[in-house]
Amino acid sequence: MPGFEVIDEKEKKAIARIFDEGKVFFAHGFENKRKRYHVREFEKKLKTVFSPNAADALCVSSGTAAIKVALKALGVGRGDEVITQSFNFIATVEAIVDTGARVVLTDVDDTLNMKTQSLESLITKKTKAIIPVHMLGVPADMISINRIGKRNKIPIIEDACEAIGAKVQGKFVGGLSEFGIFSFDFGKMITTGEGGALFAKRKSDGKNARMYHDHGHKNISNLPRGLDRAGLIGFNYRMTEISGAFGKVQLQKFPSILRESKKRYSILEKYIKNNKVKVRHVSSGNEPNYDTFVISLEDKKLREKIIGLLNKAGFGTKNLPDAFKWHCAYFWEHVDKKIRNKEVTSCYNRLLKCVAIPILVSRPIIDYKNIASDINECSK
Image 1 (tube, rainbow, N blue to C red):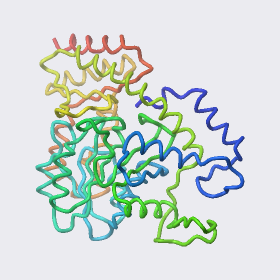
Image 2 (cartoon, one colour):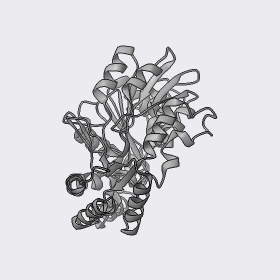
Image 3 (cartoon, rainbow, N blue to C red):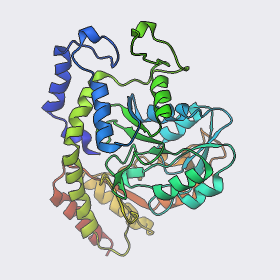
């Protein structure tokens, strides 16, 4: 969450330098008017850090756009089905629907991510892609999900928008499957205000994605852009140079963001000692990005009391419950009037018990010790 918390003069100066470099805010062309291509540089740096084995890294206008670009690169369209999970952000479902495909929703497990048994039961001959989502910073069971995808010859689009910096068996999320998706909106670990990125494992997928996000442009090297040819019917999901310059600065700050977030997360993990409070499960060998600390409580009154404590202390809650309706498919009847099936309802009932505590690097560590103590006391 804290990308916006660390914005300072460095980002401001990075944007100002664009004015001295030719005032070109478009990520393509204008070679004679500019000194560098910030978006292309940002892509290379992202690939080096998070997905060095990817064939391509592409920056786009949002995480939502990145999901749709990946789906279109895979040829997903009308008559296809795409499986994702019931605890999600509406954007994932919107991207699927926008391709014309049907959304199929799984239940979630103790990590609050895609339940693999549920996934396997929902695969049909129409399934064209699977989108697990690393919700609120904790990785999904990617080893099992990738295995299921490979066995059924279904590509995996790994939605890591809320988990930049999390790891599965020592490897960053976003680089584990055919596609990985990042978001850089204002609430993410790295922010460019709005923006996103995708990593493509296969060269052909990366080529299709790059064309689709830019009106189908092939960007043939020996042709000026105005004489370039189209490889497919595309759209405009390009990132601006302002966002690219901003993102490069944020990426430099990311190790510190992750380190400071872990300190605060670890305090809650260490000091919340209460048998009425269950801490969200993180699978062995996996590591969260320490963005959010989620607890669950069977006692409804105690849950409401803890939410009151968090609000009074100025922490608030993150998505659970403050933006619950935007992050649980149970409420998305505008997508499908029959959406409240057994998988979605099971997920809803699990999330009703949860409270998400935001990790903010602007809050001193003592604040997290104090809120842990308050949570322990209020349940006695």
